[in-house]
Amino acid sequence: MEIRRARMEDWSGAKDFCMHTFSWGDYIEQVWESWVREGNLMVCENDGSVLGIGHVAVAGQDAWVEGVRVRPSARRRGIGSALLVRAEEAAAASGAAYARAAIESDNAESLALFGAAGYRAGGDWHMYSCKAGPGGCDMVKAAPASAWPERYVKSWVWTPLDSDVPPERVVWVGEGPVAVLADSERFPGVLMVTVSHHAGWNAKGGGCIIDYVAGFAHRAGQSIQVFSTVPLDHHYLDKKAYNVRIVEKRIG
Image 1: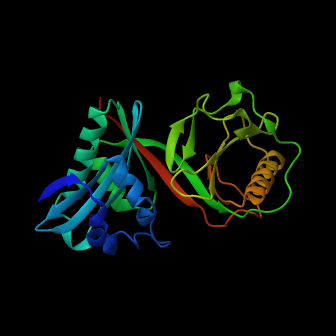
Image 2: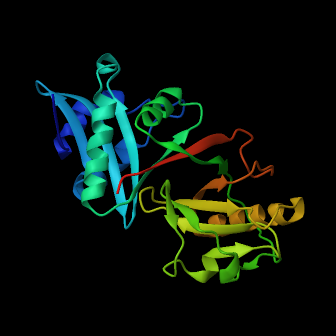
């Protein structure tokens, strides 16, 4: 078996095990071209057959391992572990000190794979689909920098929040939750909203945040994904939440 950088044409050999990974499908087809162009998408190949893939995104000291997929008939052969090692090597060579991954908390196989490689839990999140709708909430204001959260979700990568984020995209209701509104780079037309509750939560403030987000996306013609540190309840939110666990490991 050989692990090498992916090529555009590898998709034809990978799509049969990268389209229906979850109950809702998968996102690999949407990001394949951009990941290949970035140069950090790896494939495991044997006799011309693609057996597995894995990608790592590096931003400064952080690396995010994502999209690890293995052909069902090739599992239990160490392919996922080998792809993970290669991703960590590429991340360390690019200067990253930590490798992290976001895994649905009921994905026992992936959690076991990363756990065996030395990753430890770094926090749990609740992810919701959210409807866009007219309206908003005049209680929502730009949050002071002192209330900004450490990280926000940007295309399924928990990215450090810095001065590159427009201040008007970080909002709050008084002393309550803080929300960061980010346009997804990988998934056009998707607004990714990170709701942090370090300052507390109240039903009125939380409801205003969701009303504001729904109106914001409605005006922009966007769909919405909401990531929250606590469970949420609002008529714009899907009743079913996906629980996401962040796992992390020091690599440098």
